[in-house]
Image 1 (cartoon, one colour):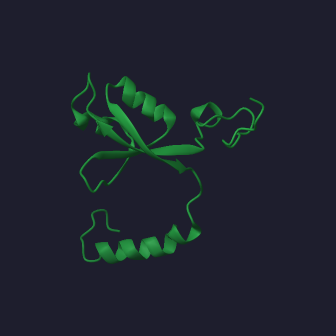
Image 2 (image 1 turned 120 degrees about the vertical axis):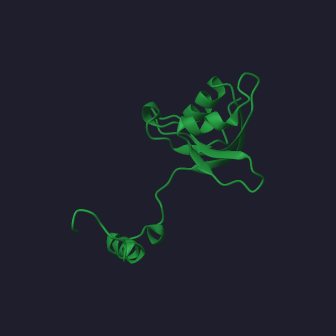
Image 3 (image 1 turned 30 degrees about the vertical axis):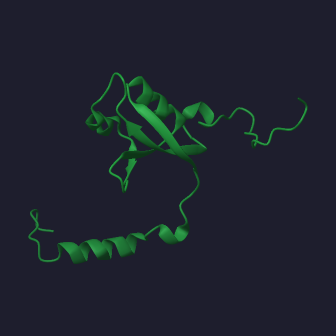
Length: 117
């Protein structure tokens, strides 16, 4: 009974959802399936969740524990696949403003613009 837990301890006042659920420290890779009370998966799109492609055609999302609760309350079945830690995006994956503007200008070159710009 007095053995230390193998589970990492959260800082005081923080749970898996972070302070008040606003800044989660972990999210979950999950699949959403028809539930007993809600069989229409098209309604998942209305919940404004982060969807990710699934090779098998399932409805796959990256969600917080609170979003899982919302899905369950909406009548869906949720299957957690993996824990996804929340961390900053690596700097090499973040495009700089100048390169994004150049890319956009290249794509819209030759398209007439209203307003004279």
